[in-house]
Length: 320
Picture 1 (cartoon, rainbow, N blue to C red):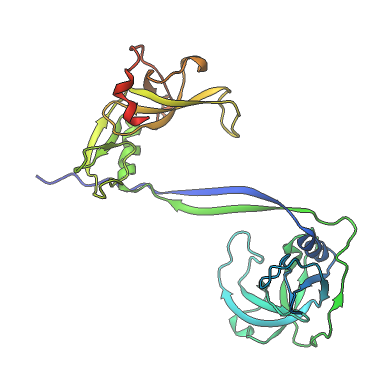
Picture 2 (cartoon, rainbow, N blue to C red):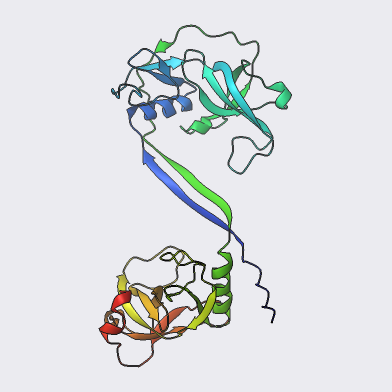
């Protein structure tokens, strides 16, 4: 007998995005405020080197650094790589070179974009200058990019700077975003497809016989593949729970509500789900519940009491 072919493994685009907020110490505050004022500041280390971008502690001695100096807006490319297909959020939307530039007066290099006509127009040792952003905000993006400047002579000595500005930048908000394609794999694809048919399917380990729901494709204890599919539930037992009192963004559920670990009948571990159809202060360990699907829903919206007597603790204590 020939086994039925596996359904296509699910895939879907996924975006994880959040604002990252941080405060700035005196050195980083001076550096970013300086960029807003078209001034590039570095810091002098214990051995006399000038670091750009500046750091607050010496990377060799760990001494606190506060000796700020102003360097030039021109510099030399020390190394580079061509970027033929810029991505969302990168400095330029046309092909450009990523470059490390040692600004005149600095002993370290800064990473940024170089606006060039093509890879043949870029070389190590070429002279470049900063192209400032049209609307500075006190961020690294105030350097819009670098541009070739072969006629720029190398600047001389650096100038001491107090690092003090009017209305200094004291914090930044940097958006963090990750775009990728997520696949739940063979086992969880079967689990998700079964949920759409209002069935809950796990997989049994052929060695220890534990039934995993949701299935993982392998037993983490025995290290063997789990291919024997088992339909569990749909009813189960609340093993532990928590009362949620803080409303989540974009979640249309009134607080307080209860999220619980639920050991479905026949499963070897508990999954989590929201409990409804009962006042939050009446949810308890041992409560017997069943899934509720909304019309057209691909997964249970919540679990509600079945009306059965509570399960004895000994029947689920291993799953708490």
